[in-house]
Image (cartoon, rainbow, N blue to C red; front, side):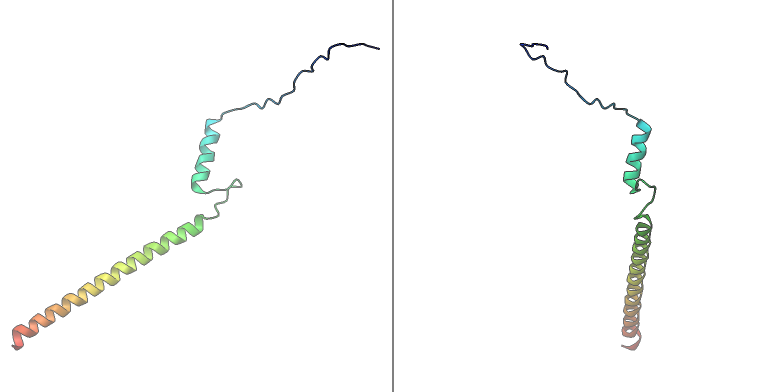
Length: 89
């Protein structure tokens, strides 16, 4: 049997995680995050985003057309009123 007067400490264990920096992998990860692509490569909101963009363009063009039509009708009304005053007064 061994008689020990001082307790010797055991060596500390540690987990060494190796770290690698892959610039290309980081670039593509950032790019996927910007485009909203998940890890499996699917774009869940891409089609809805396209639909929203097209809808917004259609609505803005229809609003512009309506405004243009209203302004043309107002101009025609003004011309008719002016012609009436010149010729029938």
